Length: 308
Image 1 (cartoon, rainbow, N blue to C red):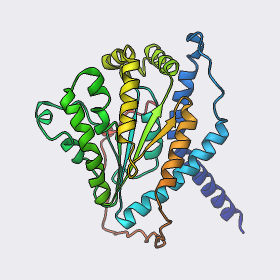
Image 2 (image 1 turned 180 degrees about the horizontal axis):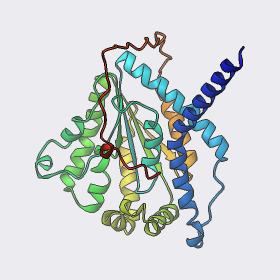
Image 3 (image 1 turned 30 degrees about the horizontal axis):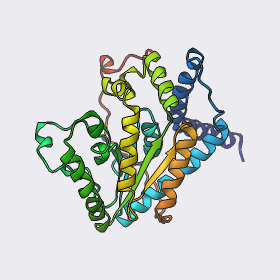
């Protein structure tokens, strides 16, 4: 091998290494965000924290599971499957964190998140499930509901946003609604992220002292802290009445965020019978060059200033 060839190979290896490192930056940024919050722990007295999972183990397992999620995505697309995953739990329980890790490596056209705001005046007059049904997947799609139709059994019940008749009707309707989804070949998974009273108080205090997280703490969240026991009772009733043989609830111990993410993603993969999909090899065609083509000049003032 000539010296020039060795130099070119070394340069190519360096570029590939850099590209792979760049692909990991998003996850590293998210983890650095967690580290920044951990640095505030000393400002929160009287909070005992159990050791979390080793960082090397966490990253290795997360990347392995994300590779499996890509295989799941391929299978869903290839087989035109429809997948719905519900994420429920108290405020700050970690639903958003696991959703980010699931979607991070996936195609947003295949795997999308439905996080609906409070219903408007028109939606309040509709069939309760109507606005959620509009976000259900077509063939080849995965939809992750960051909170779902179970709002009626939780926040709406506790905060008085629905009548008792509407609440009871929900429990009458939801089993049949979910059976309809399953009969239409939708794979339905339901997860409840469980944290302790002390852990939620700690996470809320972290948000209060963190300017990048304060937006997550709404007046509704603060009010919910005063109604912990009412939310607990509502959760227990919800699980008792909607933990169904064909659409069961799965509880995620979410006090440790990293373990919760790995456990939840691993469980999702275990519940869906996906298989590897064989793809035709991709061959990059040669670049077509037209000798008459001349690239036009770009005015310097159109470029974003190179501050960095």
